[in-house]
Amino acid sequence: MPHDSLDVLRELVNTARIRVVVSDLDGVLRVFDPTLWAELDALTGTAGGSSYSAVLGHPYLDEVVRGRGTHARWRELAVERLVAAGSPTDLARFAVDRWAATPAAVDERVRSALLALRTVGIAVFVLTNGTDRVPEEVADLGLGDVVGDDDRFLLNTADLGAAKPDPEAFARARRRIEEVLGEQVPPERIALLDDSPRHVEGAAACGWHAVLHRPEDASRTGLRLP
Image 1: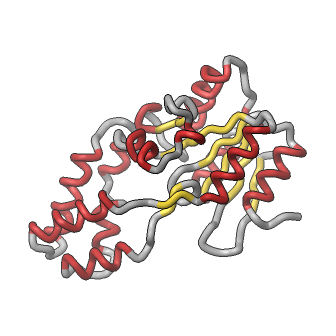
Image 2 (image 1 turned 120 degrees about the vertical axis):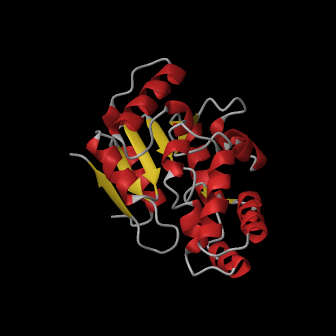
Image 3 (image 1 turned 30 degrees about the horizontal axis):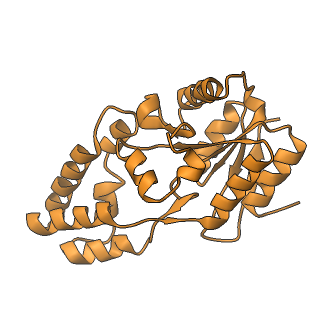
């Protein structure tokens, strides 16, 4: 049995009559340098983990990815949290701007696998717990070949109004997929590739096949609902 997540995904496509493959964006198709957070902590003179907590750990992010907040306001609140953690205001603002401007990288192995699936007739979408900035970020990365030049294959939760792992997020994503394809797609004919165990479990609970992607190590597994 394959252990690599992409091999698991390919096997699902071959054995489970998969019609649609849905990939996560961050941590799967788009990756960031994890050493940045320690660098920002040193820059702001705050305790280890403060920058990560101020940005990705801020509760306002839950609003942003559901379309009820903006990336700009999220950055402002992250600055405030860093200041509360002991950073001078100017350094806190510089650190948040530095984070926001840090370039990501495309995992070319994932991109190639997704495009190869599309060439054999599998519909490929990207589902991300994203913000109002995602379309421009995806364009900057040159991912038009995956999401489509008009973003028709991009499922951004900030637009959907519900975020993974909420069941409503998967329901709305499936409805959008059906609108784009012009056909009904039963949940058992959809496969999700995601690096979050909670998102994988949420998708499986909704009847999707789901594959856990762990690019940071060799441990990869698959999960599906019988």
